[in-house]
Image (tube, rainbow, N blue to C red):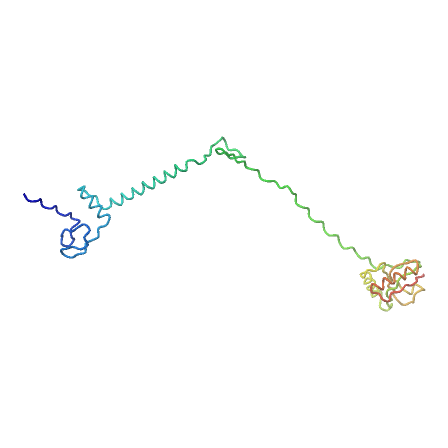
Length: 229
């Protein structure tokens, strides 16, 4: 009895041009020389399916199965992560909400009230006092006899305003008791002048000492003089 004839090759391992069977991983057809199509993963899986089951639903079955596998793996990862974090603290409700604290398992965190200001704002600084007003020129006391320091003698023809300006300048220079008198009203003085004087003294010595201070203040021609009515 002869050997049984070999089984025919499956349709998917035949040359698409001439129909000659070829090995599963053969690159060229030995009959017509056609470069055979590459067998991918899907083709290999489909061939194995047909060898075991006559009905084949189509190549889409492999994409569906791959999607199911990925979904199953992702679900397993999520479940494992959830169980791994199961030891965290759990917030336990202790009753109606109250102001003051939040209670968790094993921990009570007080909520501090807002801090109150403890330092009152500083009062505004008092305004600066106004500058002291400089007293104007004085007049020689009526009927008074004494001594003084003559700072300047302004001719009466220049007017009293010129003498008043010189008297105010002496006050600004720091001299005390500066005043104006008309020399024609006092026999001890030469008539025809407005005399700018400084100080009213009882003795000539006091007037002489004051004249030296006036010279040091810039009035080089200052001199003591007797004033008699």
